Length: 402
Image 1: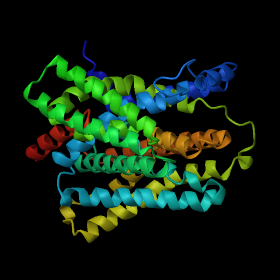
Image 2: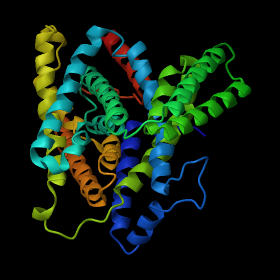
Image 3: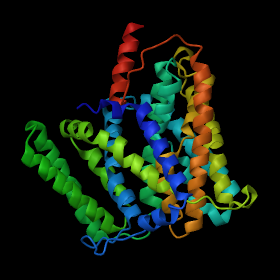
Image 4: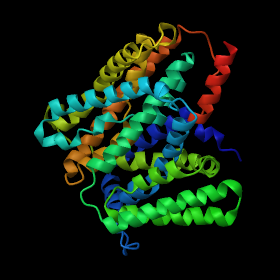
């Protein structure tokens, strides 16, 4: 049975949204306390020194699959895709930096010193959700708009990964980290061997074992375990990477991300007036849709002008506004960074989660409506892209037809 439908960005976005709505709804019914207890429940025994709650097994364990797939896409983009040269990567990099800096500044200005630790939360863009909304409502937009949003979101995710590694690591066990580096090196070697022996089951099993051991070592080192998925995805050779992506992408889109969205969004809405919600909530609600819109749009215009991109090749202001609005859909990575930033304060985790959901929803509604209206100005096109790699084939086809 083909699982290609799960790779569709529209389907992925709807699964994410549906899971988040379901989690939020259940958490605010009589089943809420039981669900919360289950999320915080621990196994009666530790797993090789790891004693994690059910929620942390999802964020530290299953979510590694998502970051592994993202890292494979990152490697592809930087070697064969839209970011395979400095000139191609320059404009989306500048736009992404603007989309990180402005939301962070807005957040800090609203949240104040008490909530300052959460400044990375509104800097994230959810690749799956943003591309899904664009595919759903902006079918007629030029390929350059899709390419810039994709490249920008990829760079944005890379920045988010660096934030997780640098700002959310309290202490590091150097022995475990050194052994994890050995594991990454062994994974790279096995990937190179696999390239010449495609389909070898012993090699696949060896790659899986090394990956699991490396994940455990990273988790024990004190660095967030999802970084293991990033490192392994970046060093894996193209042949096994493509094979892994084909097998894991349906799992990531259909199970891992919806389960994470369900778990993260399952918070009880505080029974207080809106005016009594903490500044953290309002900072995220404003910083995601407004900060991303202003930051991406302004930086995109400045980048194109500074790099002297020919006018015929530039993304128009109206199109940059659409990209900026969709960039405000933080969701997956923003929810993860919210949990990491407020891990010691349950109340802020709740309000931060609600802020991410509300801010992302505002960005999705405004972005979807805007690109839908903007799309009507363009002639119909065939939008069949499903992943970053498929998007490249679409761009090549449409460019040759012109």
